[in-house]
Amino acid sequence: MEKKGALLFIFGATGDLATRKILPALQQWDGEDLPFARIWCIGRRSLDTRGYCRLVEKKGGYHLSEPLRTRIGYHRLEFDDPWAYADLRDRCDTEPAVDGRRLFFLAVKPEAFVTIATRLHQAGLFVSGDSNHRLLFEKPFGESRTSAEEIQARLMTLADEEQVYRIDHYLGKEMIRNVLAIRFANRIFSESWNGRAIETVEISSIETAGAEERFEYYDRAGAINDMVQSHLLQMLALVAMAAPDNFEAEPVRRRKIDILHHVGLAPDRPPVLGQYRGYGPEGFASTTETYVEAALRVDTGQWPDTVFVLRTGKKMGEKRTEIRLRYRPNSMCLNCSEVVTAEANELVIEVYPREGVLFRFNSKVPGYGYALEPVLARYCHSCRVEGDMPEAYVKLLKDALAGDKTLFAGFAELLVQWRIADRIRGAARIRGAARGQSPVIYEPGAMTVSGEGGAG
Ligand SMILES: NC(=O)c1ccc[n+]([C@@H]2O[C@H](COP(=O)([O-])OP(=O)(O)OC[C@H]3O[C@@H](n4cnc5c(N)ncnc54)[C@H](OP(=O)(O)O)[C@@H]3O)[C@@H](O)[C@H]2O)c1
Image (cartoon, rainbow, N blue to C red; front, side, top):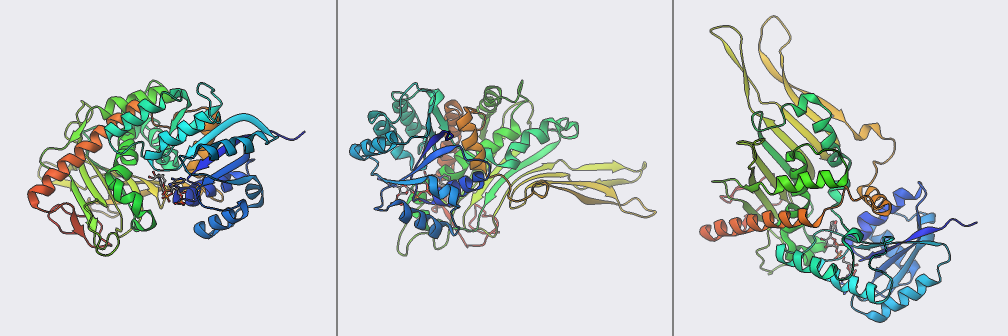
């Protein structure tokens, strides 16, 4: 008897996210028995399924595997066209091998979330209260705290919260999932995971690419909405939160919300917004930020005087994502008259391009003397895996299918993230207005951008 499977619907299937991340993830999953009987790839372009597969291969620069290709069906649809949803429903009704589970992956801009959910609901493709039907929303969920609240209020008239999965794909990345293990499974780190020992926590995600084909979306969003509000604040929450009672979805989420409520801007260090030189089409004037650096404080007993720096930028000198903990410097009293100063320890959780952990500590220089020098210990996480590391989207789709929400953002969490993002934006604008320039223009290839206009 033919094995039955779920239905996956990808809205925005001709877009960057679908072609560069979601379909390659499905291709990686393929070998492990893809659970989808049909993958409906939905776009507004006039294509048939073969033409769609050709477009994906051309855009993505890879070949779709045969088992994946045979499950793909392309469906043409304008987000607001009710007839196209009715056609889609009719096409689904003829599928013989489905088991009732439906994942709707909205890889589209947030303004389209409610329209698509409404049309799916009206067409009977998505049924509210049916736990087999789930809506997956790509980040950003909204464009500000207010718009996130509006989207949520309207969604809740169509779906139960249990049916809603808000994706932040960084949470599915191996080394981000490793943060809690590194923190809580190692006494060497858990005992010193506080502000008395740690001076700064730098969370960076920079890249060499510019806005390019995503310009239209990017110019509306900017780096704060694209990266800080979601990925970087989630990383901060994982680093700063207190130990949960256990590592299931709810206790972890509660701890993240608790800590995010205590995040504020560091005094005397206003956020820096930058824009790379040459951003956008020639002659186009925009104040959208492509670089952000925000210094934050976490106002709890665990983090006195620690500065958390979030940094992200496009067209930078390299593509790198990491969490870098810099400890307070130490010194060693050799005898009553001689004190040897030791360099600060550093713990780096490497997320991209290397996946691993780097620890810098001090050691005696070999020989008869007692001079100190910093040395590095390195753990390569990805070296342990044969073939490709599991794609974040595979993990997230598997969890969504299994109903496990641990790696998905809850709405309360998201609202606090929006509050912080809105504050960063507000403070940066005040600073920019005072200086008569917002954002600061930086040269492509810079490694950091200073608030005074220079690139490092
Ligand atoms: N790209 C990434 O790496 C990434 C990562 C994380 C999150 N995201 C988020 O995911 C969302 C999509 O990003 P993206 O980069 O994939 O954007 P994109 O490349 O602009 O793709 C948008 C998709 O939506 C379709 N679309 C737009 N308006 C439509 C309409 N009225 N009716 C039907 N289809 C319509 C587009 O069709 P056409 O192809 O015909 O224009 C395209 O398939 C954004 O909110 C973004 O922030 C993206």
